[in-house]
Length: 485
Image (cartoon, rainbow, N blue to C red):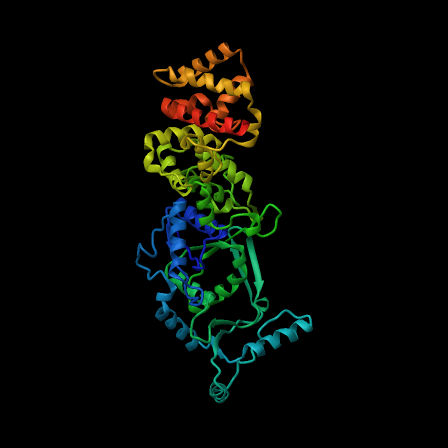
């Protein structure tokens, strides 16, 4: 049997971490088993639908490196791959259920259903539809229609039935039909079929062999199995992934930090690091290796190794992993990814040579946790006129300012400024002024960067060159003298 899985999101405006993990596990399962990864857009909720939201899904998947084999933009023999384009298909199967006598029209109003629910809760009973409209006569139906009521279509849930399946993550699950809340709706009063119905039709017709999704769908599974059986479809295997929790063990939400793929991308997490981290939410390789390429994850991934307990989203671990990826990323590619953050910070990148920028990235990348921090750490290389920090100004006095002025003379006399000649100029300045240690190096650092700590100065000056170094030193002397006067 050829493995076929699908990721079927509803376009709601953003791709949540949970959706992203579901997409990834489907992709890994498909690729590990030489199967097919299908993308299907569940866009039947016309009130919430927008094309912009669909675009968000495409962009998130592409950024994560999850290229679908079939679906929108790709096509395939089981399309169309958007539910809004499959209405005629659903109509056919609605009629089949009608012919089999497995569905009926329900005219109950929202008020009547609420009253039914409140009465049951008052008696300590679980809310369920009582089947009030199951046996309406044609005459009664016509009378209700005349009142302007538009019916929904409900599926007849068999009584006394236990729906059982062997979940690939959770093990054997058995749910009694009495726990399903009574006969459930499969078509709304506006004629639009609901999720539990269309997902069965789509999965069956698209030959989906394994349904891998979040454990919040467990309650939907018995209803769907009953529909598979009613329509004579083969039931796929199910795997329900554990919930993702924050570090306080509550459901992951905004208060824990970023929760959408777009936010992680914007902050400057590398897609490879983010995807690697997501793969470890609920699954762990047997060899214990954590930094893994996509091909290594695919090779090691086994759905049976997915833990059934909730996964904890550890931001500290994600940051560590992203830092490791930044340290080892291809330098030119990393520079290309950093440039938009520099431009957003107001730097006119066309003024800097790309090869020079890569050297700056190389000098600063070990400081970065996320790419959005790059302007902060690269500022020292990019900005020749800067404000001197308060603690640095407080450190300076007449004697230390004299060190800077003397150092300027030494640099001015150099034919070329590089790491070696810089160290020589510093050494000579110290010798001639009898300055050493902090009293020698710190004034020069402050004059070159405006800060009391940062990158190695020999690396900085070799990248800046003589002209820019002198420009900075003169700027700093003026600023320090102005503040000291």
